[in-house]
Image 1 (cartoon, rainbow, N blue to C red):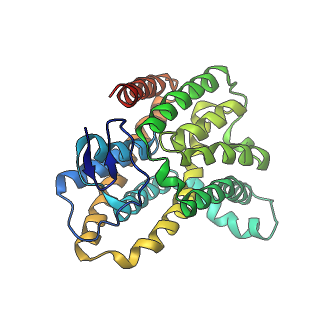
Image 2: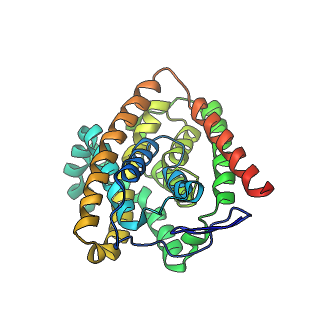
Image 3: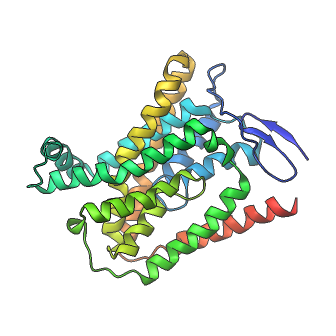
Length: 296
C-alpha cells in the first residue's frame, strides 16, 4: 500500500522518505486541520509525549496535507508565548540578569539563570544545525524512529522518575547541571523523543523535584524555540503570502491557548502525580507504531 502526502511517500513499510518539507505557500489550510495542528502542538509541546512526533504522524496516518514549515514556526511561536506568560516571573528575572551574565557578573539569581539557559541551549543549537544542513532531519522522519523513541525514552523517563531523588530545587541549578540537561535536550531533535520529556528525564536523574525539574525544562524551551524559530523563520518568511500569514496567525493563537491550558494542568498535577501516566501513553503509542512499521 502506498499513498502520497506532502510529508513524503508513505509505503508498506510505513517509512516516510527523506524529502524536504513543503513551505506550503500555494494554498490555504482548511480551518479544521489548522485547529487540529495547533491543538496537537499546544497540548503536546510541554507534556513529555513529543509534539514533533505527533505532528509528523498526523499527515502520514490521516492522509492530510503536511502543514509545512511556516505553520510549524507559527505554532512554535504560540507555545513560546505560552511558556513565557506562564513563567513570566522567571523570564523577567532572567532578562534582567542577562546583561550581567554576558559581562561575567554572576551575582544575582537572574544572571545565573540566564547563563544557565545559554549553556543549556548550545548543544541543541549545534546538533540542530548539523541535522538541518546535512538533511538528516528529514531522514529521521520515520514512523519506525518515532516508535522506538516513544517507547525507549518513555522507559528512560520512568526509570529516572522512579530512581531519582528529590534533593534539588530550581535554585540549585548551576552551570554543570545546565550543561548536562542541555546534552539531554539535544536528543530531542530526534523525532518522538520529546524535548520536555528528555529534559525532565535529565532533571530527575540529577535529583530535582518533579515540579522544579519540569519548571527548569520549560524555561529551557524558551531559547531553544527561539533558536529553531529563527533558523526556520528566516528560510520561510519571504515565501509566505497573505493567506498563509493569516493561517499562521490563527495557528499561533490557538497553539498558545492550548499550550497554556496543558502547561497549567501538568504543573498542578505534578504536585501529586508522577510521570507514570505519560510513560504509559508513550509505551502504548510506541508499541502501536512499531507494530504498524514491522507488520504491514
